[in-house]
Amino acid sequence: MCNYCGCQDMTLIRDYYAEHNATRDLADTIRRQMDDGHYAQARDGIGRLLVELEGHWAGEEGGLFAVMVDRYPEDFADYISPLIEEHRALAAFLRTLDVTDAGQRRAFAEQVLELHEHMLREEDSLFPASVVTFDGDDWTRAIAGWQQAHPGLELIPD
Ligand SMILES: [Fe+2]
Ligand SMILES: [Fe+2]
Image (cartoon, rainbow, N blue to C red):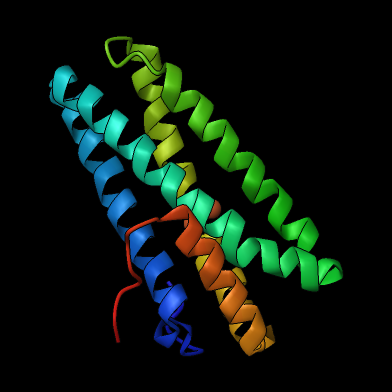
């Protein structure tokens, strides 16, 4: 987690961090449920995790990422495109995951570690970069993209 540049003071970035923490915690809980043989609970959790991640990804891709790629393509496009591919790959994996299959449970545990690493790449590089790069219009657009992905919700208030 980035604790250096003050990016967590930005409303949108703070929300992305909160979404990361919530989905990481849920993924870790599911992994433990699988380890304990609680497969029905784990299956329910996978459904919730997929919904939460899809919302988070839509908020990133339609918000911060879209502005970064559109406005500063030479700086960010190559960094962001693999992140988006990883979103799609994890969604596809979760959609077909059979929690009763030992091999797939092991694959899920690996995916959780990769998700942690994916989020660190966003937290340590991308989010701080946006803070030093964006102007007011960029933030307005990024927040509008997030809002479109989360109808009826509000960003965490100051
Ligand atoms: Fe992401
Ligand atoms: Fe993310």
